[in-house]
Amino acid sequence: MVGTARNGELRIIPVTGGTAEGPRFKGEVMPGSAADWLRVDADGTAHMDVRLTLKSATGGVVYMHYSGIRTGTPEVLARLNSGQAVDPSEYYFRTAMRFETGAPELAWMNRILAVGIGQRPPSGPTYDVYAIA
Image (cartoon, rainbow, N blue to C red; front, side, top):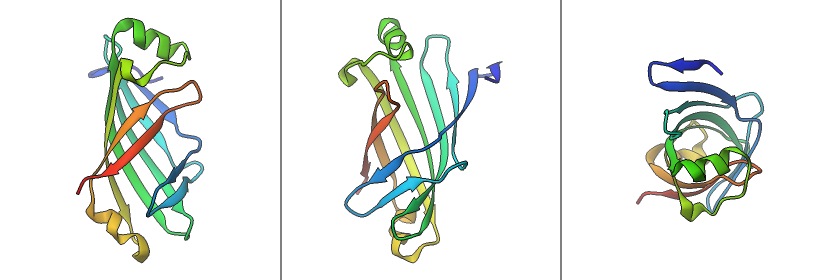
């Protein structure tokens, strides 16, 4: 916890693991390489600023940065924050993503923008990610 700063409460949260899998990419978060500089407004709206490093199944390294918003009614956010399972239709959770890599087989990732639709189950956030054509 950094505390209340100029733009709401700032929390720096380590991302300790995770996986990414799709039709053109499979990989995992590299340990010690990721965090979320999360800002939380007084109304509970969360503004994500996540930076992480992925290692692909082929060995390529990918830097991923995304920003996003998670918001809902005070009652829904209280349930999420207490660790309860909440139906994703009850809150808004969206992200915008960019990627950077020097791996030749993953160079296509340097040329896309992606959006994510997030969910916040008790086990941690998950995203369905779509490259924008």
